Length: 605
Image (cartoon, rainbow, N blue to C red; front, side):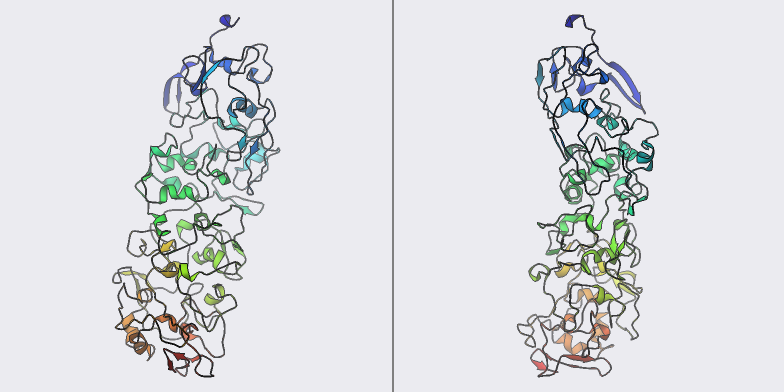
């Protein structure tokens, strides 16, 4: 009987969207003798490895391959509105999995099989947590990251109709055409549509702003984003497929629909290792972008490589008891845009577009998206609990005489209620003259003028990579890492004493006021020669020439509390790890009297 069966060979010429292929479009699904698959049988009729025209056990698709009875562990996400269920026997996905889960041998066809097969391949298995969800619980639920018509009308956004729901559900055949491997010649994965620039993905996933259930679409802003527009050539050694550039690979640059390295969000690699693949200065893409991960190997860096350093998509914006600083905490990879020009503070940079932040008004309200750069910093550096300091890692931390209960909470330090502060949260409003203030900040060379001083500062004006592009060098921008303590952009030394009030250990006599000197960070905005000329305080020259650093008498952020003994103007505070009370009198300072009372460097003032 088998000898009398017709030979089913699909030898055709297919033209689709300008693509041309001549031959067997079944490709890897042609299991017949002489087929193109890694596993083949001895029968020439290619169709009969899946279908039987008569007497098959399943009415659906005249299916002949034995169906799998496996139970599948499927994708789970705390950000997804839809959950999965086990695929029904005979449903499209069940047909595909009868071979692709590997529990039933290929060629177990009824009634003509089983066929003797040769070769090896790698099935998906039944652990599908890191594969795109399918066989969803119906009806579909709407979500901000889905096109509105998906749940409302059961339709995708694909105007050609190739990407479609199967009986209202997402199945394997929503994205795959099992009879034609070459609809997309460059990505020969049986796709129903040419997937260049993520066309298959964006048929269901919305890339425009949407708000559903109070949640904003994290994919909004994709089309003008850095990744969607990147013309960087992707190395074939990464094995992503047949496209050429990051923009062409689009979603595939970071995500894998099957057997992803990281189950969360189907990332190709776990957590932020996807980012490392391109942003570590290697040969994976060309031209090579700034080596961001070089910064994480410097003396101080944000706590990226930690045991708890993982970002969860559904985590609270205010990071209580969850100390980590991964790429996704500060950057939304779907909407981050290249920074060609640097806007004035406090506006957030384009590289942080569509990222959430915390309001400076109360330290708890979510700002989505963040408007000001400091709002992203307040996710961790405001009211959040669980903050820690490690002098061995970040450098010496002054013990301020005037301090709020949480010395790591920056909100009171930069607040308008602070008696003085650097102008990060608000405009510069000091009533006192500031003769040392420059007209322009200086670039990292300590000589070339940068942007005009203005009335506001960024957090990153002080905390930045020490070789950043914004201020004249070629490194990555932002507080990723630095060779200086506290992720500071330039050298800023802290005076230290063995005992408070005792001899200062790290003296800097004959002060070096240049870009390599101990006052380099302050010299970015302040003319240090004016400081030495005592134009604002008669004691500056004496203190500096005696080897004191600015940190002995000035707090760099602001006065986070009010004190009856230290008035707090001009950022004057005292490091209690260096100075001590003068006999039984508390440490004090009065700007109006131009006097202070304390013991420092074994000298009573």
